[in-house]
Amino acid sequence: MKVALLTDCYLPRLGGIEVQTHDLAAHLVARGHEVEVFTATPGSQGQRHGVIEDVDGIPVHRMAIRLPWELPVNPLAPPEVRRRLQTGGFDVAHVHMGVVSPFATDLAGVALGIGLPTAITWHCLMERSAPVFRALGHARRWAERGAAVSAVSSIAAEDLRAVVGRSSPISVLPNGIDVDHWRRPMAGQASGYAADTASAAASPARPVEVVAAMRFAARKRPLAVLRVAHRARQLAPADAAMRLTLFGDGPERRRLERFVERHDMGDWVSLPGRVDREELKERYWASDVYLTPARLEAFGIAALEARTSGLPVVARRDTGVGDFVVDGVNGLLGADDDQLARNLAHLVTDHELRLRLCTHNRSVAPTQSWTEVAALAEEEYRRAGAS
Image (cartoon, rainbow, N blue to C red):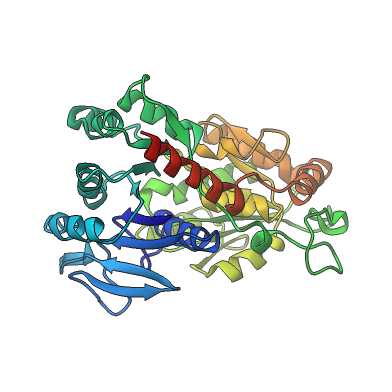
């Protein structure tokens, strides 16, 4: 099968959709498919105007134009993309939608317009933008024209259902993860998804290491990480020591630094900046709890990486994290920031609970492995063809 992945954003930009589409392409190729990517993101050397760049063995059509801040927008792209899709021998198009995706929106219409079987996946919650999507009618019309519509989590699918309508089937096509990359091996072994109970949680004698990783953008709520941790430390007994490491960077950094200074948290809070996935994995393996207070989280790939690494996850229950974290089984879920703080304080003080949740996460692999997700993607492509 020859697959066209259509997305506003792609590498070298870094973000959820960018990394997920890159990894999906690689795993589809590994399963014997041919994949090409069409994006409005410039290439690693500034490639634009339809230049085809090889990225890890995948042809990437750089349909970008020169715009301020390298915005991934190109209203002039549809005619040329239409020509390439018609002459390229493609069997299916897979469109990846975010909150604002003008390029992907245009290309969904192009793919459906030429009769190409089309799968469309939403990577966002529509909560605030649902009235706009309903008014525009794109999603509903695409479903009516036979597109196989999906979202990355059950809560995102329910959001989408309110826009598309309940008569159109909506699948859940989750983000994927390389389980072997993120899991922590047993002591003395190179691999194996099993519990290393000797180091599965912090010893009561040392501080509990709490970790978080995100873009320092207001939508991700990095300031809430500090607020929740500050409140948890107030709730926990004075002798229950904890440390917090918040990885990431972005426009909110200065606000975070001011909060740390103002609340005298410098001796137990660290903001080391952004790190690559290898270093992040190592830090997860050396930590005890993962914290994410994000509200508009359609999936939560960073939380899944932490859960796969063996960490109990503290998160909100009204997000996509609920698809892979079960309250009391491999993490603790709360309805608001106050409950998150109480849950975090509980984990910091209850060594046996931490050990039990951590042991479960190291013993039981998540169902969102790339093997499973790539197979689900293939099913979406068959569904699009049948439509």
